[in-house]
Length: 85
Image 1: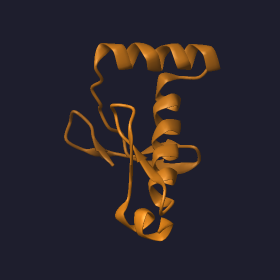
Image 2: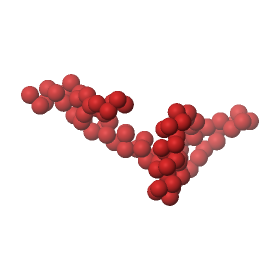
Image 3: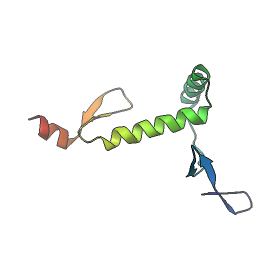
Image 4: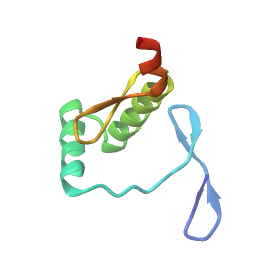
């Protein structure tokens, strides 16, 4: 739930389920890229961010996968490294 300016909590529906509204700040280059993706796909920027968050969560939940770092490199989890030996 989010708080309205009056201090009351508000609920938001997204994709048929209850959702929490958040505010996120992006560097201008990231914001621009998200906007370009949204325009290309003909969806809202919020949809692009939700889609990316859902994909990130699914990737994190998949044990043993490599972690993709912001510098473009990957880091394998300790468990993944042990299993590959």
